[in-house]
Length: 287
Image 1 (cartoon, helix red, strand yellow):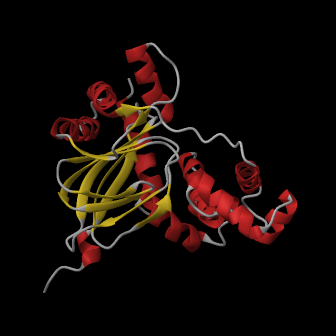
Image 2: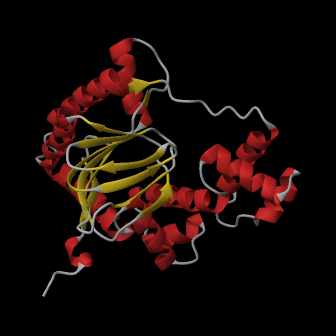
């Protein structure tokens, strides 16, 4: 009997205790799809088998083995399998601060850096991503940190660019920014689109169009993504999943489980257990 698609899927999303500004994901997905979402930091991934389809504002990237995917902070994207057997990959999520500090160390200039060409064939960079994973999994934080810096330096040299700025000059962009601030502040009990538009002095459809143009997704999709981000921070701090769900405005823990798993790639319980295991291992190894 053929193995089910669910049984073929596996994922580990974790941190090394000595590298708190770097998340690591190694996974194989077959049916799992990532809805439109974004990250506060950067994404550097390499596909090791199969094909991943990454939906980005500039189009869809079909990433096969050896392809390196680079996504800048706050860029909305989706991901799904590009072939029936799915895809396996290794992904690094360094914080914006880490990448920009490396860039400043290399160039002597401060500011936000970007990467052009989200999907490129770069075997050496692909190998470096896997080496960061291998070093972290072996508990070698020095090697993982060192190889990460070599990777970022190479990607900047070959694919670095100035990221576009989204300064809210127009009235619509300003309304979108104000709406985002309201949703961030009142995440537990957000207003309806009609109520939010009335509060900002605009129409629902105008706000919907402006928000999607500014942030790449409608307000309700952005809010789900923001709730998952905040839930991650709460889980990192040791908050129980059920409490985290209530704190960010999900109706219950299953609601959190569903959206968290879709966006992060692992359930909140598994995510938190990896954090706890990392912390315990670090304590056990401390002199």
